[in-house]
Length: 252
Image (cartoon, rainbow, N blue to C red; front, side):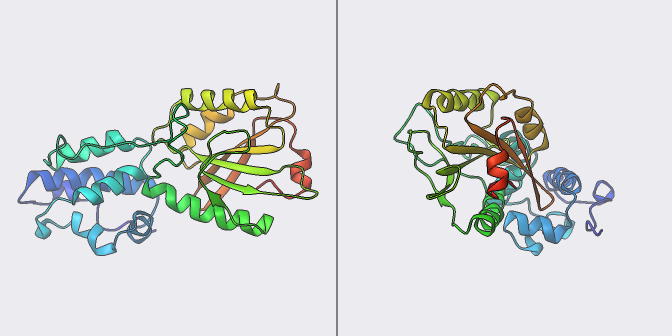
């Protein structure tokens, strides 16, 4: 697989040290992603030329703040990566801080949380798959019937075993185990037995942490974790009552 000419950056002569150090870190992120330069650029929503210029000494510029933010949001530690790249590129972090704006369960007025660039591709691909298996389009934002906030959802009627399939996205962006546990509390308190809740992530560490949570005592509620990895989805339930969902084709 062609990962581009990024292996010898440390041996290259850059006029600006900040460009070199930033290029080294971005090359590391690219290598760990397992993507080619073209695939990586596509995931970020930038041109291949914009990406390859980062690794060209003759370009003599550091990446723009917008590109740095997109690259940071692709990683498992967006804010930490953003701060590091802003430091290596010698840009003003005080003037351009990493701002997180996520849905706050204690703030009902804030219905839709900001989704970083790397999550957009997950949502797009997942919505296509959900439409294929259910025949219904995914809608976005708002609350379930029992006032639990959700990002994406599909509603059902008729003979389906559930009335709604709700999605939330946890990729390291604003993620904490406390967020999930609080969400679980709302689910249990609501008694929403006719809703399936799925937490979607492309972070293997987040996925493994979520599936380690024991939901087997929840007999009537459907909760799953969906991992998006290399273009494929893997769904694992943390509750044990999903046989009817499997039969109805409401499992990945």
